[in-house]
Image (cartoon, rainbow, N blue to C red; front, side):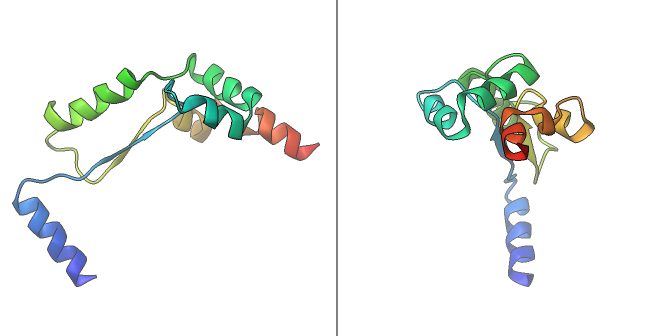
Length: 107
């Protein structure tokens, strides 16, 4: 544990920030594989919750902001870049129990 704290101090002393981005479904050449694994209906349901599938540009804008934007005080966080899907599931407007995957498990 002490080594981790020391490393964090060394990183901060150098002005290095560490953040991560967690995308939702993104329309890339890999999307069909995710769709196949999760199921076409499930992926359609996920995208319906936020209105559309994300683009690589949607993700790149957030990463660019973290790198060169006014984000200098953002440090040590994971940013869900999923159009609000994870937030919707947390507060209830996107109810995962209504998803095709959940319905198929309960039947």
